Image 1 (cartoon, helix red, strand yellow):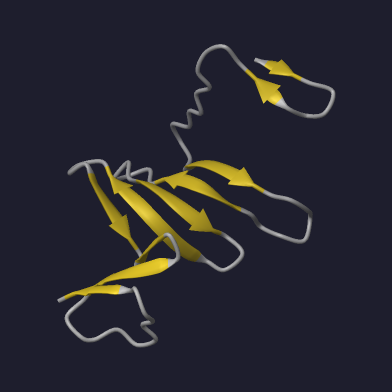
Image 2 (image 1 turned 90 degrees about the vertical axis):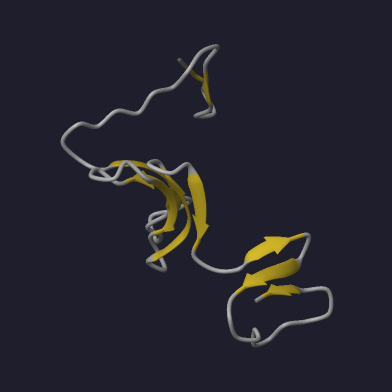
Length: 100
């Protein structure tokens, strides 16, 4: 791993983050006023999720045991939302898709 004078990190191989006794996290923080966004791996289930520490919300989770992706909210594709729920979505706009 090479660290440049502009704080860039470069490698020709893999970067491995390992934590046996604590939760493994990779955070991106722009300034000292924010807690950051990034990824965290659950120590017990080994699921990997994207998290927003400022707003205390989970976005998307890769469930290791099943290989499935779980989304906390509707999926956004090219600015249009994909709703998968039993009731009609509130705030839907033209082009949004609703699967019941």
